[in-house]
Length: 425
Image 1 (tube, rainbow, N blue to C red):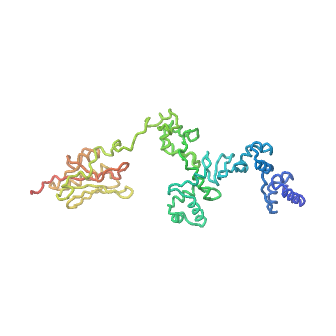
Image 2 (image 1 turned 30 degrees about the horizontal axis):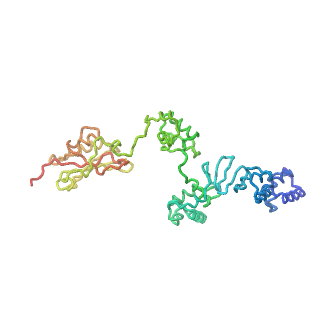
Image 3 (image 1 turned 90 degrees about the vertical axis):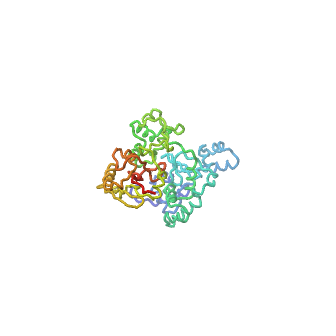
């Protein structure tokens, strides 16, 4: 029609045909009207712009009501068998998509499955009523709680306020809204179905089937990359593709666990450690110790040191400042609490620097106050044979080590045994 003014007679004829047919598109094609112009005319006239449905559906429904089988009723009405099956199952067709009664929308153009706008990982199994009504552990959100989230969010409440109202952490509310909100907003019933669809276990393994993600991981292993390097490379190479994500543990399980494998045997040889089996790390006895010598617990020190009755027992420690930019070592006599500070210039407070500082400080003591300390163990741990203490005594650690713990200080707390003569009893 271009920019020309629409003929009033054509406009009247269009509205009459639209009233008879009920659908804008076929009438616009019949009269040669622009589709946008036709929809504008229908909207201004206040007429419905949808269609009345399949012209043979009424006849098909009548035959089905008479007890005719689906196949025969579809043949008599001239309906495709798949269309008849969709009608019986309550499936609606919109464009190149199918909308199922449980809320799923399968878009065959993009290959995505959504539920009220929430994208699901295909394939998605239909959610049964039993699964929706199943009573779960209290840590899972219920349908009523999801309805409250929708209402409180619509009222403008913050995540923390919603969490307080439901007795839930704010992170739970944030995760629920982030995972189950679609373009049309947050819908509690759709969110409940999505959560039920995600619940079944076991889940499919990411690296089992052929996929770009699996090919990327295999290529990285052939380049002698570690699983951690592969994970970081995926983030940099595919910053916007969430499907191209995998954890380090998933890669290791695909390599070493037969039930969860997926990577080819020849790729296992590309692991830089060269191991064919995973190294167990849960048993503390199998771990590599942080120190050269066995640890001696502070509970093993002699009673004379514990009760602080005899002077001459010293304790050493290292105090590190903010961000490790400064440090000072201390020597404390346990009985008198006499303290000596060891100056550590600059930011150097490694084992050698602390050792040299202790040597200088101890040498300022009178010979009668000389102390015997864990020289053997401390010297070995520092990687040197020189020590401010005389060898022959055992050192003690402040606390027993915990599995998986990491030492924050480079110098262990030590307890020093005195060599001074005891007073006669």
